Length: 157
Image 1 (cartoon, rainbow, N blue to C red):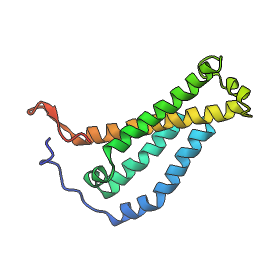
Image 2 (cartoon, rainbow, N blue to C red):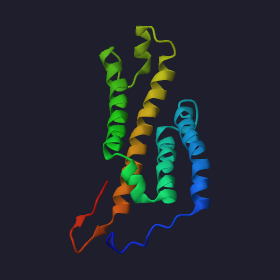
Image 3 (spheres, rainbow, N blue to C red):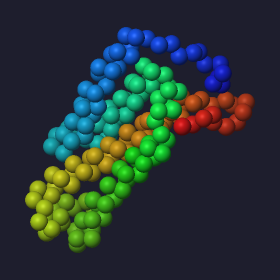
Image 4 (tube, rainbow, N blue to C red):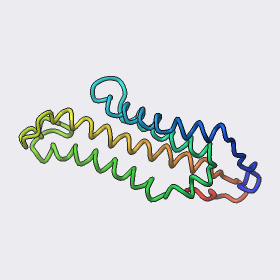
């Protein structure tokens, strides 16, 4: 099915109003799950998926093409890259301080109290950023479609 064969986007006032109301709460829930993973069940992956669904909800409510045009593909890649950089910085920072990879106690020699808690939360935030970016990117890639007759993907991002 090519982009020309897709049914037109139909606006629904009920869905648009609901998404406008619910999206901030879903975003807050996703961030809570990310940070709560340092203490109990939850974490970066689960929170990242919930945060990524906020963009999916916006796309379903306001149209995939409108959200794709609003959201810069560089921002999605930047989100993924920043998550990877945070994770690697925390991991290799502890190695530079003569600890093992992701050994948060190594940061205590810098005078950072509760280094384990902060380290875990930063790692969870980094993982959440990676997962959020991947979920959003995959959604837009899949929604762009693939026409086997043409042999290549259409407008990916």
